[in-house]
Image (cartoon, rainbow, N blue to C red; front, side, top):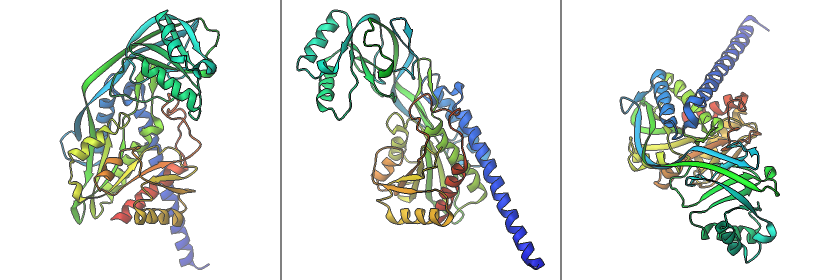
Length: 423
């Protein structure tokens, strides 16, 4: 090998090492971002202790420090929502104190309730009976708390009878046994108090249940999106939006739902991309939006679409990132089957660079903040990564369990290259 060839090889090796080091540094910063957003002070980035506002302030500062410009001095884009919150959630079965978030959940729309009750277990046999509703109502009048057996959604008889029981009740307290627990956020408050309890922990011979639920329904809660941008080098009045939601479920009594993968990971990716594109401006302006209140029903993105900061007619594409912490089994692109040319370009980039093991296409779905853009005709993708990480809407979705690896680097490169392609 001659000297010139050796020099070329050494330069290539040096370039690869530099890229690898940069990606590792980016991943470390992203992990720190996730750790911060999931800190206990942020209260699950929900509506207890103004956790969402603390998170938005952190993101706004990061945007400013990165070098993004703002459409407002504080980078914030305010909106209002109604939300049901829980200051206290305590359940005790006989002498066993249950852990909120792990052993039981309070239905997100539940109202306050407190008391000590005798147990009325509604077995599969009773629940399948035509007398189930009558017997449950009679038990409630006698001071019992109904505990409905768990059932598969495919069992239509049990599912329909359980629905009839719940619909017939007003001002009642009851328990639904579940094989697994997944929480959410409600923007309304019910007349009833439903508690979901992990089936595997419930003793069918339990005699007494004590509960204390303190719900606080907040009208016109003030939340916000966070928006920054990089001006386009050639066509600054045309826009590409990169986004993800920063909010999560918040707290349910003492339980914190951290939301490491959902969606601190997406915000970490978005800020990582913002850092790159500040140093590498593109043809079009790039707008970075951290949406609020996604978990409450895509409220932040709906408010943005109703009152856009940049014209929707001038928005060329929206790329939404949610659940970006895994990737060992590839990625799914919602709207991939609708915007076929863009999907083909994305898969080509992935194949040529061997970024992710698989890219799957999905159709239209109202499952994240891309949705309302699609509804008004703005081309939009929603990417979520797939892998062995399965914690979802649980206190276990935490930085302790989510450690970013090589597929974070590769998904970052995939999105980066696709945005460059769109320009």
